[in-house]
Amino acid sequence: MKRIPYIAYLPLIISSMIAYKLIDRIESVGGFLQLIVTILVPFIWAFVIAYLANPLLKKIEMKFKLGRGLSIAIVYAIIVSVVGLFFTLVIPSIVQSITDILRNVPGYVDTAEAWGTQQYAEMERLGLIESLENFDVTSMQEIFDRASASFNTILTGVLTGVFGVTSGVFKIFIGMIISIYMLKDKENFIGGIKRINYALLKVEHADKAVAFMKEVDEIFSKYIIGKMIDSLIVGIICFMGLWFLKAPYALLMAIIVGVTNMIPYFGPFIGAVPAVIITLFTSPITALWVTLFIIVLQQLDGYIIGPFILGDSVGLSPFWIILAILIGGGLFGILGMLICVPVMAVVRNMFSRYINRRLDEKSLSFEKLDVDSR
Image 1 (tube, rainbow, N blue to C red):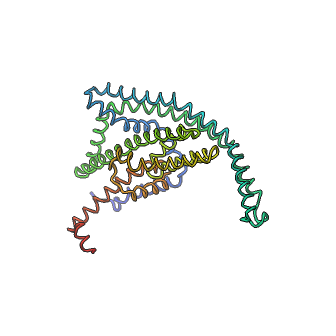
Image 2 (cartoon, rainbow, N blue to C red):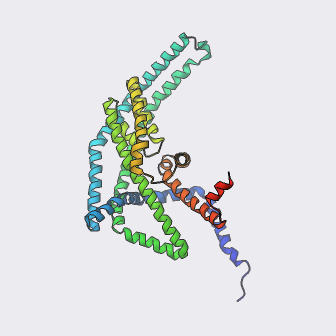
Image 3 (tube, rainbow, N blue to C red):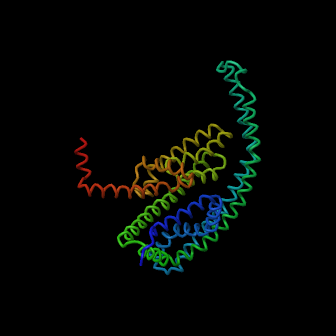
């Protein structure tokens, strides 16, 4: 049979035409992808919940020798109890604190305006400002007027966010139900992924893919769960410290510090900013003590609590962790800062193995390179 010339180029031509059409209708494609992601949100939550609940499920199954169904029931009873306790005891206080803060925003603005005016007058009295003519007095007033006017915008955004949270809670609830089935049949899901993996790839490549997935799972599970426990402890200590210092909205500020503590190094300081600013309006001395307390707490977490809980779960030096946070935050915002460290650990391990393999191919070793560089 005579072969048609250039038939091998047909898939490339078809792919190019499809790519052109997709680029030509990029807005429609983006809207379609956004719709798909919106539909899959409950499944994404289901995977996250199942992934975080799986270590507890395995411990219960191994320690008490219980069946899968009963173990899942115990795990979700614990989860529902903790969430219910949180919504019963913590959420009302948080809502009240946020309401009070929003109500006091105009007062905070007036206080800041009066302080700024007082400082400006003092600087003028001391001769630090040569003439009022060189300073646009209306600019300061305009800044505070804008800050006061933004109060309504903030309040509207909060009310809009309430409806978003309500919708998100419903999706999380659906995701929790789906996660039960994921945990019940997790061996079947994992087995199915392995079958597809070995069916599509060569055996040696499939083996490497399985090993890679196990490594990713180990790094992520140890780091994320350990960091969650670490942040919970930090949040509790922060609440007790702020309550002892009589700082306003201690519970809300402790939760912010605990959540932001998921971000290594920078997290506690990011969470400290709102606590210090709000305390500053009520008592500058207390704000100073709050600042010192959070700095001490960050050092305590960095040198004692964190290493005790996390150990060397990622095996990264502070330099690489800070680099990962900067890159992750710059590319993907808060989410990138939360997951960048385990991602960097996986990338570092892959790159290290590649470098070692290349050195072995060249019959080189680190010892020889160190000797040659002296």
